[in-house]
Image (cartoon, rainbow, N blue to C red; front, side):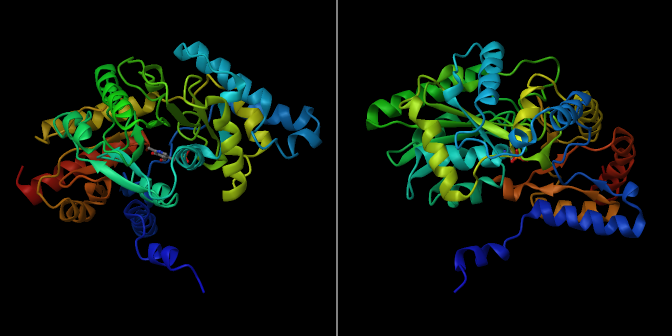
Length: 396
Ligand SMILES: Cc1ncc(COP(=O)(O)O)c(C=O)c1O
């Protein structure tokens, strides 16, 4: 008999994927250039030349038996060491090779981190607005995802609600900064206050509560701001990273988990993840891709285009009277819709070939997400469509 749980999921397809499919279909009718598709978080700038050169050099000059061979179950030692050194340099940490586990992107990192520190039936607390894939990530572990309501004033963390909801069954707290969909980066003040609450709860309940910090947008920061690295503020932290966005490599499926060296059982967590990997059939990302990213750890694609796009859209939204928090990073913006029903709002936008994602699946009602990882020229053209949309539909 087929698995009924997964069968049920077939009927609940991702809203984002559905909108993206609609945009592609509409593109065949009017030309994709005329569809203002803000649905999908797929990078719009190529990977840096350094990555391509690393791939070519590895395939031309290294031993094919090494490049194409299985990597050890805890992933490639030289790569782990390079990642540890880079993180220590950038964030003043003290990682050793044994604290790094290479994964298939952030999704793979979260799959291992969640399983390493929770067991089926445990609660995982996260914060609205949140990345909708957290639902299958967490339910796939047999855990319960509980969402702290959003602080819509600035999309930092609703600390009062968090403290109230952090009960004895919560074994992990899952954060995402810079945040998809809000574009907000949690401030040092927010991280400090949140981790103080977690330390108090650990003391009160007498068990570890792990912080799982999902950071695939860490390199996309605006206005020259620097990233506050959550692991610096809380020992029991597993940092989950991906090269999907920083190096524009979402199809290569590469990322890692970095275990804070001061975490409980820090030296056991990577070997445990290697065991998890066996059980879920992950069995390490491609050896050659691990080797290639290790050579460009501190390089990025030209990410400046996202800031240019953000400024164009943000200014227009403000001019049109939208209530919107200015993003600190990522390639997302999360304005309030012009009517309570965000689904209806986004449906009307489609008439103007504007593909916007309603906020309901992000755990907040009445907002919408725009993923502006698209050509700047298209962003400019889309502003006219946006003006026509709000003037015609809402008289603004
Ligand atoms: C917040 C967040 N976490 C995790 C992921 C998954 O990233 P990856 O492609 O590296 O698996 C994404 C992808 O868009 C994301 O936005």
